[in-house]
Length: 31
Image 1 (cartoon, one colour):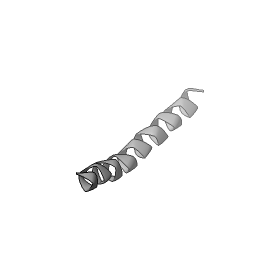
Image 2 (spheres, one colour):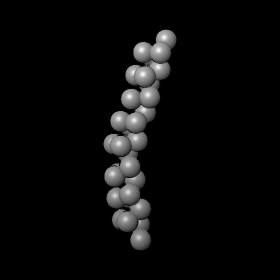
Image 3 (spheres, one colour):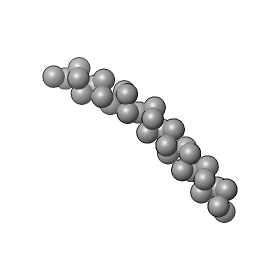
């Protein structure tokens, strides 16, 4: 259970790290 939770947290963190630069690039592209 705890191991699964850790994997989910890791996955979410990795997803955010991957999306953050893309989102910021989109924002700067609009302005």
